[in-house]
Image (cartoon, rainbow, N blue to C red; front, side, top):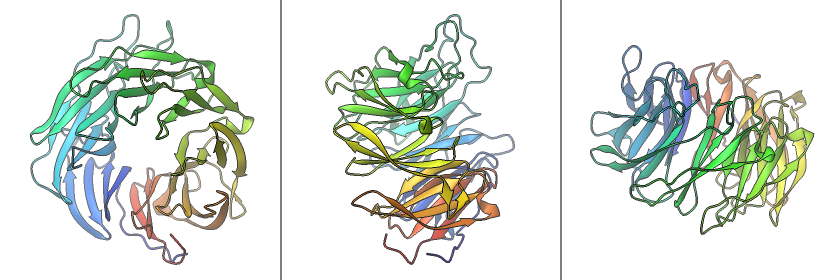
Length: 397
C-alpha cells in the first residue's frame, strides 16, 4: 500500500463527485468549482468576492440531467442552485444560477434569517433533480434542460414538533422508482425527529408531505432504501440505533420502525451498504468507531466494532466508502486528520487494518470516495481546505 501521493490540494473543499476518472470538487471558502483528471486541472469556476450565483458557500453537488451532463451545486449562501453545463470535463457555457422558489414560513414558527439550499440529489432515472431548503423548510423539484433548470414544483415541509419548530433537514432521497421523495428532519434537540414522504408524479406535482414520527427516529441523520424498495434504513443518532421501517412499494408509506438499539450506536451518522445488501458499515463520530453490521432477512446485528487505527484511538471517524470491488474500505478521521484503508473479506464482511496516513492536507478529513478503477482514493478535508488523492497500487482493488 502506498507510497502516498497527493494529486492536488484545493482550498475549502466541501464536496466531491466522480465521473469516470475525473473529480469535481466545490469549495466553500474559495467559492470555486474545479474539475481534475489526475494532477491535471481540466476546468475551474470561481465566484467573485462574497460569492456570486450558485457558488457562495457551495455545500453539496450532484451530476444532473438525463445524460448527467450538468454539475449542480447547492449554494448555501446563495439559496439557489448553480448549474454548470459540461461536455466531458469542460464547461460549454456560462454558469446559471437558479434561485430557490419562495416558500411561506410555517405558521407559528421562527424561520431562520437566511434561507439555505443544503442538499441536491438526482433522480435515479431521467433529468429531474431534487433539493431541500433549510428555511423555510421545503423541497423543490427541477427538470434539467439545455437552458438550465426548469422549476417543476415545490412543497413546504412542516415542522416535526408542534410548538418547537427547529428544523434541520439532514437528507433528501428518492425511492428506487422515483415515485416518492423522502426528507429527514433531525430537529435541533434531536428528540422529535421525523421522516417526511411526498409523492412525485414525475412531471409537475409534489404531494402533500406525510410525516412518520417515532421515538426510534430521534436524531435521524441518513436514510437508505434498498433496491427492492420494501424498507428504509435510518441512522438514529439520539435514539442510539439503526431504524428499519417497512415500506409499501405501491403507496410509498412507511410503517412503524423497528429499532436495533445498542449504546454503541449513540452518535451514528454515515452509512454505506454492500451491493448484495447483506452488510452495512456505519461510522460513529461521537464514539470514534466504525461498525460492521450484518443484514439478514431485514434484521440487523452488530458484527464488529473498530475503535483504533493501527493501535491508535480512532476518535472522530466520519466518511466511509467501499472500493468498486468491495475489497477495500476507506474511512476518514476528522480530529486526527487521517485516512485509513481496510482490507475487506468479501465473504464475511470482516475488516482488517491495512494502513493509514496523517497529513496537514487531511485536517478535518470528511468526504471520501474511490476512483472508478479503485486505484486511488480521494478525500475532502474541510479545515485543511484541500482535496487530496492517494494512490493505492499494491493491493487487490
